[in-house]
Length: 518
Image (tube, rainbow, N blue to C red; front, top):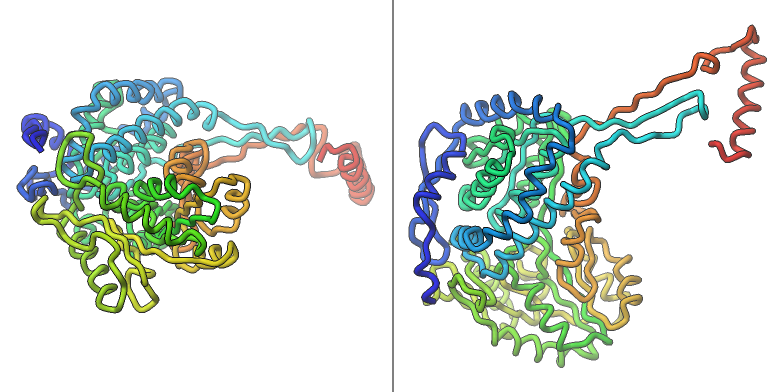
């Protein structure tokens, strides 16, 4: 693990932390790999949040007045700039989260790809759209898009770069300013990106950052916003929705999941077992779209189990800034305690640990082995509650109908995965799964990284969507502007009586229907 000798540049950390709106109070954050202090981050007060909104609103008007073709320029440049400086950024992501480098790289690719998607498409999405009017030719109708104003973005600790940037970028491109609250544990990658964008030409004040606990700054953060985008737990999302509802404030919420993976009887078991490694243990399972329930057809269940257990036992886990590690650390003591509690509860009630099931303090303070459980039932917390860690439960099913029932038997509906050699069969089955995204022969990446398609949750997994047109247009107010010709309107013309006008209009409408003009 010699690569762990490469630490973050202290001067760089101090410099990017100046981008936080704060009067100077600080809090220590720990490096998950070592448990040692990584940085002292500024903490924001209620007044700091209000000041951030004041700066954001002062900058927003000029930003929104720019043509979209100018607003996109720094973000087009960001794609190549991030890829060119990837080593520095990957180190930051790993040090603040504890994840393996390959999973940090997924974050970087997500930001680069999603930003490029919106920078390319923002001009078309935001330009006025012609709409059909009530009377052909006589009524000209257009749909206009205006920025909301100041948007609050609240992003979590598990994917601080990807979720901290990709929700902000479309809001900015739509002409808004943003007041962003990353998690206190993981602000560095976002702040680094803000500094880079400022170097590339983004006006600095349109992206404000505040740090603090929800109970301290949550109220002014919501009160100052014209829209709220939140990614986090279902419990946290309910609280955001309640506060937003008090002001009739729009919000989007991407929340928790207890995501199923279905292995059909015709699946390539070697490929499926390897795919399950990624699906279940990317970022040590700290991924809202990670697989936690694994359903395997009874005809191939034993053969799949043996392959999967063998593959998991061969995983390399530990700290390291190289590419060889398959899984890194959990991010905090709270995560470690929660994962351990789920496994201990399941074992005490009769579940079997097929592999894993132990913390690894010899590797670092928050490491936990990738774990497969068998014999999980309804009495165990791990059965239905989100674990958010490297733990997956193995179940068996008889036929497709049972697989669909089991997959849908959850309060959540975020992501699902299906493995089969018959893709058409997989697509038919996917249409029956109540989840916002379904991947066939992949765990999560195919749907999530298809930026032209919306991503989000059903049921208690959230409201609204990121990605696709909706991922940008949700940050806008839509306005309809219609102009009416003076020679045909909503009152009688040419001296007609109203009854004659009514008959004429009825005939005109029927004619327009026959001619498919309406």
